[in-house]
Length: 119
Image 1 (cartoon, rainbow, N blue to C red):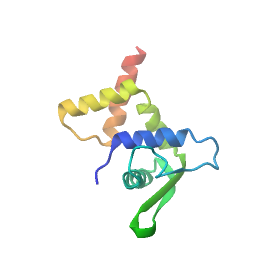
Image 2 (image 1 turned 90 degrees about the vertical axis):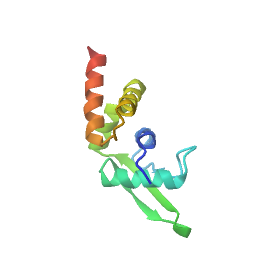
Image 3 (image 1 turned 45 degrees about the vertical axis):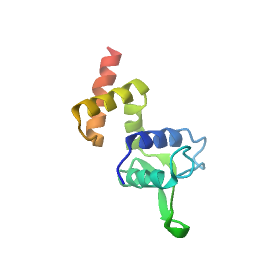
Image 4 (image 1 turned 30 degrees about the horizontal axis):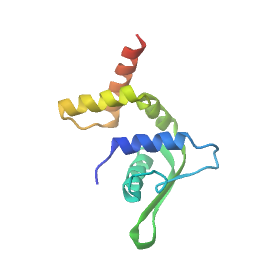
């Protein structure tokens, strides 16, 4: 399975919306996206230390993940890609240049785009 930046962005936004520190976002909470896809992306996000939570294999091997907060790096990354205009431009640039999107590149491009919007 591949990393899906659109799903990762949606997950970050949902976790940020949690009302309290006792609230939890689970891999089955994202509408219109299969639980296994969300769980895989959440495992990657845990590995990258963007979120805090855990994952486990459920009955029949079906994965289940939950997260209760963004980390500092998760907040920083979300701040960089929050605006739809910035996010859509990043994806457009990647598509026209046919490049993959490592997190460092996304952050760098987002910062440049945000600076351009601010000036």
